[in-house]
Image (cartoon, rainbow, N blue to C red; front, top):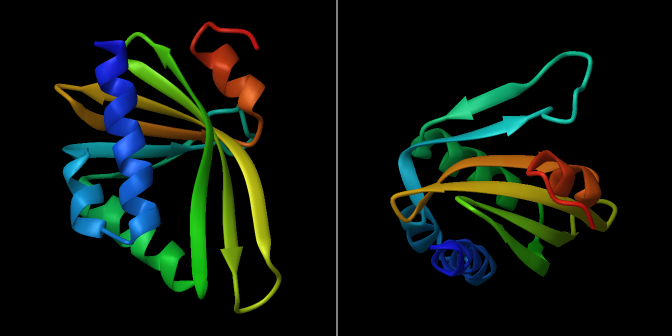
Length: 132
C-alpha cells in the first residue's frame, strides 16, 4: 500500500504543476484537511477542512503568482503517510519565491485525507517516526 500512496501523492504534484485542478481535486478525500502549525507554533495548529475549502486555498495561492511549480525532491513512504520534500517555485507579482518544505500527506482509501506542511523536512520525518 505504501507505494500506491506515494503514487497518489506524486499524481497530486503532477496535477498541480499541470494546472489540472480537477485532477488535483480527485487526489483528495472529500473530508480532507490541511493543518498548519503542527511544528508546535505558539498559536497552536490551524486547520482548513473539506476539499472545497482546500481547493479554494490552492486557487488563491496560484492566483498570487504569474507562474508556480512544486518541485518534489523526495517521497518517503511511512505506512498510511507519505513525507514529501519539495521546493515551491513562484514567479511574478513581487519577489520570486523558492521555499523548501517537508509535507506529511496522510492517505485513506487511496486519497489524501490530511496535509501537514513543515518548514523543516527533518521535522516532518521526525513527526512520522523517521530520521533523515
